[in-house]
Image (tube, rainbow, N blue to C red; front, side):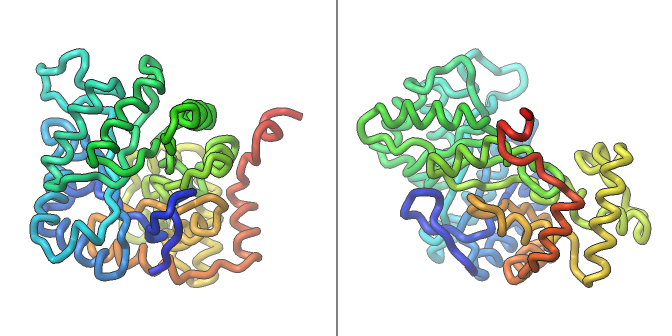
Length: 330
């Protein structure tokens, strides 16, 4: 396994992040435990989740599955860098009250205690703000985060789905508060087919020393050989991939992508992950395996070296927007 520092921190994390969003909704507890064991055996030490995972009536279920895995002992908790998120409303249907979501100090306090209980641990390594909260000032958010750090309930704070200017705003305000390190990571949508993060989010993260953790590295399966599966297995795309394929240009891009990799005997999903590992500022992409086979495929991407010629051709197929302001001005 390859490791790197998380942004400007001294924390060492694996270059792949094990995403757990499928644990519960699509993968049962026993299989989820097996995947986490296999990931740990392979040296993957970075585990990402969120309090809302499980979704609907089962919100919190994913954290519970991770908690029962930790409870098995064997040093599991000590070996893992654990990241979870706060923002979504965790109240049951019909039970929601005005302060049961977002990033107010009262909800942050409530949410972290609930996550710790479900996760069966006494601390969270990286507590991530799942979305921006336009109604709550960062002064209040940092006050709440500082209290959690002092209490030993969290070690670092990260962001998710933040625009570049909010990363800057958050860390400038943190810098004015004595002893506050600010955000140390940003989890954003970033992959070959969706490169808008290169305009401002990733440059902001690099300038402020945040590790970039891309989510949806296969863009909902779009970069995982979707057209070949459709032609040979009758497996039609769904979700984000299905929506993207309605666009003729996107379908042509994906066909060119799959043809290129077929010519070189490479697996599309593994190349998509390997490409992200070459991107400046990227700590490691989040992989969300539903099965052991999907985890094995993701691990193989770590050993895949993409040539300069391959990288250049991928840029031709999926041209990025470039940095701002050049991306939208003269």
